[in-house]
Length: 298
Image (cartoon, rainbow, N blue to C red; front, side):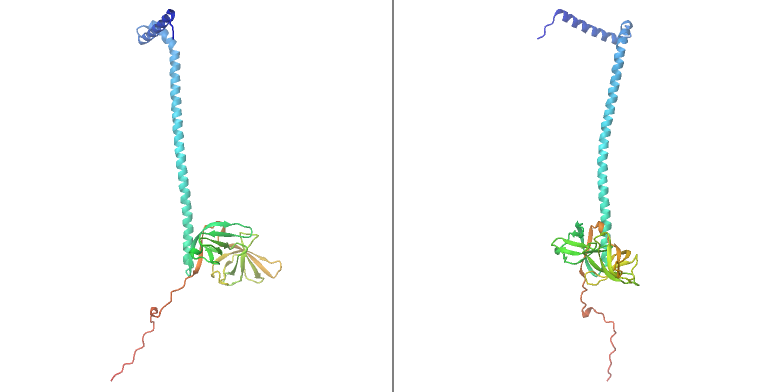
């Protein structure tokens, strides 16, 4: 509980009267200059400082508001930029897939005698002495062992293992793979075995070529059709070097594969040959005119 003495009460009343006098003097500063001038002189520095402080506070508030607004705009722009980047990446992927699918669809006209089944690559084995891929087609789709697998630019390999919903393809660059190849150049037609090279997985090799065999750098090698596993005429690769064998009896050719094995995403499996529908006798047009019949006269 507070107790006020007479002295405290008089001081409070005096302070209130002084504040009132200052207020009245300031309000009538033009009519009472001898009072207001000293008051203005005393108050002006404080008023100026207060005004400057208020202005600085207002400016700081504007700067802070602008900075916050700018941060919000930057955050929104960053989010929009990320969204656009995501859409652009998706568009590029669709564009690349469209090109690949067009190439694959164009293969149907190159192999009209076969039923082709498209398959997507879902796995790959990069072993030292094995090079295989896993595709998303199997026995449920009609696949069987040793069916050829091709790409738009050439031979890819064959089906080496088959499951109900997937299959393993042994690639042409696998050292265990061998295919009979022939030089496409009409003046040569040299035939020999092409296989993967375990020491150089990026190239194939055509081995046991007779020393006098007509094969040169730039020759195109295609499947010969021997053995019946691969159709004749599928591109295998291009000769980039011809080297003599240490025995001096035969030579070998280094081949750049026609297919791009470093970026496999979709392939085609040659299921079987298309069997032409049997022709009935009624379907054959009569191209020989009927011979005139002898007319008997009475």
